Image (tube, rainbow, N blue to C red; front, side, top):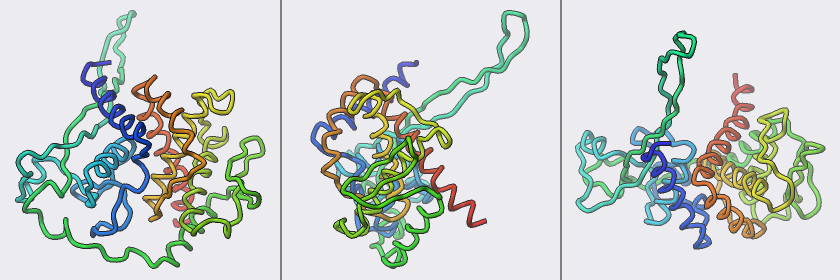
Length: 297
């Protein structure tokens, strides 16, 4: 691993560890109701396209710690191209770009082969609140995105299209992998509809780990071990990503507070773990969203 790549992994992991050690999960409520981009959103590029994977966590963390309400980020050059200017003294935030190089090599037999070399490159972006002179639509107040009743109906349909076996009863939310079903407490026992759907998003991320779906396994052997903590981290991030995409405010769940110490152990032992978890969470979201894409064609 190159020094540059190792530094990128360490810098971003250390930033997230710093927040977790404060008891703050940077993927919870990293949004604000006062911006035109919408009440809840993933971080957005200057052209409105959402960031994915680890960059979502990185920029949510920066937005939370610095109090930004605007979800839009851009490079220094992109700001200049819009006729704007990053204010003097403002500090940028790191994001990464992952890709693969294709290189021709000669093997031991003298045959030419093609080899893929993955690489990770870091660059710096600035939040729109750090930039002067941007066009008006980058800072306009928000209008309601969706009617609340319609939004909930859309979410009902989103999860129904997966065909998952979702059962209700009792006072615990969990995914039972042996019998392949999601167990949820009755809808009426939640404080509000958004709390119910955010919890369901968490359990449905677990649902994607089954061998006949994404076949995700971290070597779990017992409750609370590092494999268990890694899977819970994927489900936490998957729920956060889905909540942002579906327009839900994700709430802090007391029953998951005990996981923070386990997540810290995982992240401190491997500075690439949060990248891996974010990638798995992104894949789980794409898998779940795929059911809606199929039925809409």
